[in-house]
Length: 69
Image (cartoon, rainbow, N blue to C red):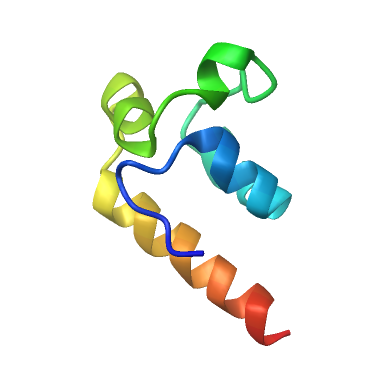
């Protein structure tokens, strides 16, 4: 899966729960909340003041490593 600014957080976590650490690092501690799972990655970054492109690089790099493992 390739993560984009429009990817829902719930979709990303359903695809790979190990990505939760990156959301927790940015201060998003409400990952189990239904409303947070319905936010896009861009929306979450905006609310938490995080560089969305930097987060996407981490998410996509981690997913690529997991696919190759």
